[in-house]
Image: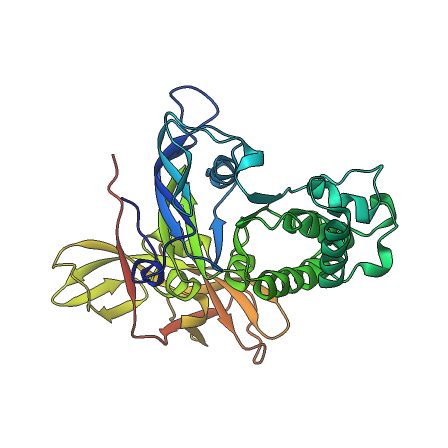
Length: 361
C-alpha cells in the first residue's frame, strides 16, 4: 500500500476521502494510474504534484466521477463513490470541480453562472447563497457582467464560487492557475487559499509546480508514471524525499555519485560522514541542495564555473566537475565569480541524504 502522510495516519478523525488501491486509465490494459492509495482529512488541502502524463489529472477525474476505475475503491465520508461494480455519477457525488479552462457559460452573467447548480433551491435561498459567495470572492460589484468582460483572475473566482455554491463536501481543482500570468498567479493563489481556509473546504489541487504545491497544501502527493511515490507534508517532501526523482522534481537538487568506504561517503567533491544504513562498498547518490554548497576560487579546484544567473536575492552558478557532471550552487549575489573560474566546493550541511545508485541493466 502506498505511503500515507503521518499527520493523516495518526489522526482520529474519519477521513473525508479515501482512495484504496485504485487503478484506472483511458485504454484497456494500459492503466494511467496504478494501485494508488491515499487519505484526506476534512478541511485539509492536498496537492497532486508531478510532471505531465504522470496520472494526476486522471486521479482527479476518477474522484469527480468522469473516469471509471478498474480496481479498488473511492470513498467520500465512508460512502463508496467508485469500485469495480459501483460508479456514482458526477452530479450525485457532492464534489465541486474547477476546470483548467474554468468552463464558464459565456451567455450567462456572473450571478447566473454562480447560481447554475442551485436550480432546485428556493429563490430566496439561491439569491442569498449567490450573494454570500460573490462577497467571499470579491465580485459583488461585477455580478451582472458576462465572462468575456472579466479578467482571467476574475473568471477564476467566478468558477470557484460556482463550484462552492451547492455546498460540496470537497472541491477539486485542475491546474487552476495555468492560464494566468505569474503576477496574477501569486495573487490568485493567496485568494484561493483564503477562500478555502475561510470556508473550511476540503480540497485537492492538481499542479506540476512545486512552489504552488508548497504554498497551498497541507499534504503533497508526488506522482510518477501513474504511481504515488511519496505523500507527506511539504516540509517532509522537501527535506526527506523518498527517492532521487522526488528530490529533483520538487526543487533543484544535485545528486552526486559516491561509494561507502570505512564509514564515510567518498565523492569527487569530497568525503562525507555516513549516518545512513548503507554499508561499505555500497554505491549511493548524495543529494545536496544548491544552497548547501559554497564556492571558493582556486586554481586547483575540482570544478569550473560554466554559467551564472543573477536572480535578485541570490546568484545561481552551474559548476562543471572533472567527471563532466554539472551541479548547481546558490550563493549571495556578492561577490561575483566569473565564468571559467576554477573553484573549490565546500558543503555546508552535515545532514546528507542518500539514495541507492540505480543499477545499469
